[in-house]
Amino acid sequence: MPKWKVEYLIGTQYEVEIEAETPAEAQEIFERRYHEEDAELDGAEEIEVTHIVTHVGHA
Image (tube, rainbow, N blue to C red; front, side, top):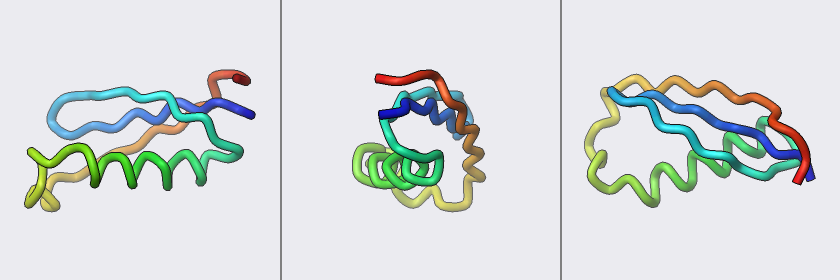
């Protein structure tokens, strides 16, 4: 399965690697994790989130 790196910027830059078939699927997985795990950012919907998705190889 291809592996994609999703970078997101919310004041500070974070990087995660997600295994997915397509960049769109990687984006969906990232968004689920972001909403579930970053509870300290709840209520911060006003902050612009920028995503950069790049192919980093195969798992």
